[in-house]
Figure 1 (spheres, rainbow, N blue to C red):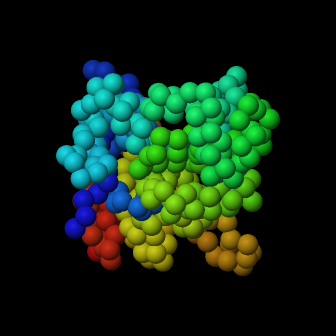
Figure 2: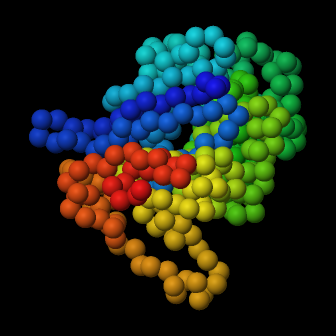
Figure 3: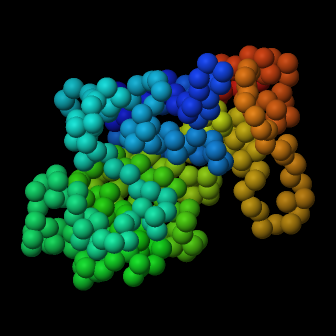
Length: 319
């Protein structure tokens, strides 16, 4: 069997914490593999820890515990969590990130040639005409005109700015791209164009994506496998068809129930969900306070990981 491109093992991220305060556990014992050429989705509501997880994988923030292993080629795997900053920067040429908000992720004081060209100047030493030609080529690959080289971010629409962000991510020839809510700030029609662009680029450059999102319709369209996060933990992991046809975890079913439906009669048949709990869940299943299936064991014991119909599910009551 082909080795995964990326392996995440028992990753934790705790913010704050001292002798009196346990802190906030944003990522809690997360493990998964990402295979070469796939689009691996991470989905969950706001505050579930999915963006923090992506930044821990990149080591934009250092995780509290756990291991991230990267295998860019047939040579020995690289343990990203063990690298110093200089070694990590070299790996960042192969692992790139597309950020959620193209308005804030692009420096408004720099022209496009600098926004995209900075990485090329550092990685390949390109300058002058060679740099301009490469940046123009990247712009064309994401559907922008090469004469935009010397324009500033403020001159572009939101969709165009996100294409600039995609071009910047592609500049160093990455193998893995982490897209953090890459289309959530865009209008629906521009979302579709951007998703199609990402898929075309994946085919052209043999890219692997980790696609972080809260919109299940987007996830269903683009992802091959999906991990569902709730309060820092992956509660269900399955291939796309399994997850959307036969969701196993109560939280996954609740997310799917929340997807807007245009038929009023179907909306009336939906179950009302329990409000999201506040405070710290000290024991048991984190979803228990809002789960209709919760029993005493759910409130007192952390659920084991079970394999159910091709899915990995963190629940006491699935069989």
